[in-house]
Image 1 (cartoon, rainbow, N blue to C red):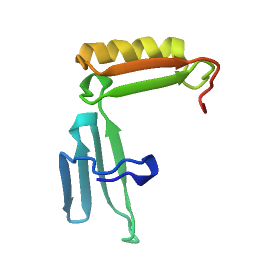
Image 2 (cartoon, rainbow, N blue to C red):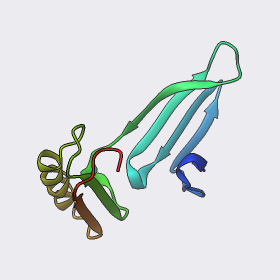
Image 3 (cartoon, rainbow, N blue to C red):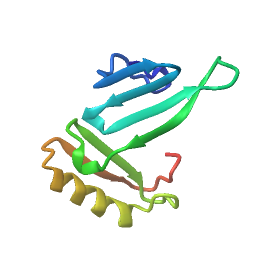
Length: 105
């Protein structure tokens, strides 16, 4: 699977199925799944994506939150992110607060 807008190519799918107009995709390594179906026009797919808990991530993680971020305050979120990654036992994680930056970096 590719996500060109995020510069990600060759993402290995755990599940990739198309059956009777229904599409199901999953990437277990990052706990993401998508389920959808063809729209009435037949030229697009609409559905729902979900992401599992941070504890389940088994890929390298870099979390960046700006010190002046009002949408995702670092002082509330960084400790929770670190605790979740530690619970999951992921050995390759980094959580960083970026001084002086907001949500838009």
